[in-house]
Image 1 (cartoon, rainbow, N blue to C red):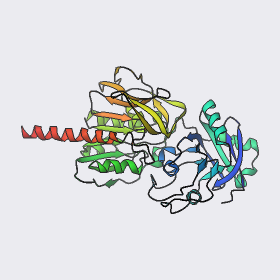
Image 2 (cartoon, rainbow, N blue to C red):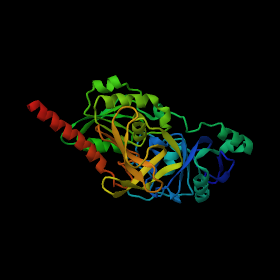
Image 3 (cartoon, one colour):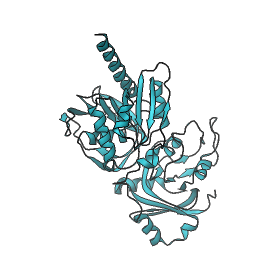
Image 4 (cartoon, helix red, strand yellow):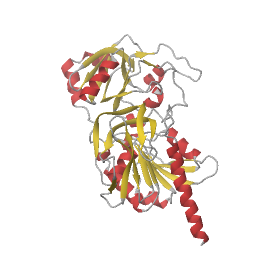
Amino acid sequence: MNRTAPAVLVLEDGKRFEGRAYGSEGQTLGEIVFATGMTGYQETLTDPSYAGQIVLMTAPHIGNTGANDEDMESRRIWVAGFVVRDPARISSNHRATRTLDHDLEEGGIVGICGVDTRAITRHIRDKGAMRSGIFSGDLLELSDGEQLDRVRTGPAMTGRNLSDTVSTVEPFSVPPVGDRIGSVVVLDLGVKQSTLTHLAERGFEVLVLPQSVTAEHVLSLKPSAVFFSNGPGDPAASNAHVTLLQEILRAGVPYFGICFGNQLLGRALGFRTYKLPFGHRGINQPVLDKATGRVEITSQNHGFAVDMPIEGVHESRTGFGRVEVSHYSLNDQVVEGIRCLDLAAFSVQYHPEAAAGPHDANYLFDRFRDVVVERNAAAGAGDGK
């Protein structure tokens, strides 16, 4: 990689930021978003929820701890492009087995460095997330107008379904750690490895299924519970997953969803979703748990949210009984969690697995485990009668 080679970031509204090539050279298009985490860049890059997005890191120095196999959250880097201010010249960490530069080049990720990431972040906060493109190498020779045309004709995130891009093709399983309490079907909409690890550590036999699976197949497995993962795209474009979830809820199977899984629960209950101006992305997002009054610092990555009043108990518009908002953002009062009062179903908008931290929300996996253990105990008592 030649960091002295020129590159340019072009935004949909015509703003241009000149810098140097970082990673592979060429062209990449995607929605530009910013992530505020000061650590965990490898987890960010390999999070499937970032598919289709050019990610700008607000932390000024990226790559200083290198890269390794343990911190990979999936099988590859998913971001469409990468924007940093100062890439590390060398990596220095006892866990590093290679440089971040190596992974970017190996993954064919077109990036840019040497730009004013603070100015770009402020622009996105003012104007909102938008389509963008990075051009370097031979593509830098395109005229400004042609580069802008390519950006503006690129796919928008609204209305886009990306689940089939990131989901596993073949089912696979993860064995439980310790005593088995039951099985959980995980619908892979872009699941992270840390999520599967947390579920297995709670005694679940984890059955990971492709996003195209049918409700009939899920229920034929007789799972103790069902989990819908995080993932990229617009939840309003995932009608099939909403229908699938409604069938699971009607069957009375306990449900836990995170991120995309939270948005799909909201839609399954009859509430709409909407696009946030610039989303929540980072590992320092404050959320209030209404039941306890406790503030959690959470890891988040979402550009859409559920449209639902944060106060009061509401009736599901699709016949699933009473529901309430369990958590909300202290920054902008966005819905961050949903709890069904007449079903064993709940979800959160943030990432309780949070591999790079923080770990305030790990208890949600314990809560999910407790639901299944209580169900098992109740079933055992019933059999005893």
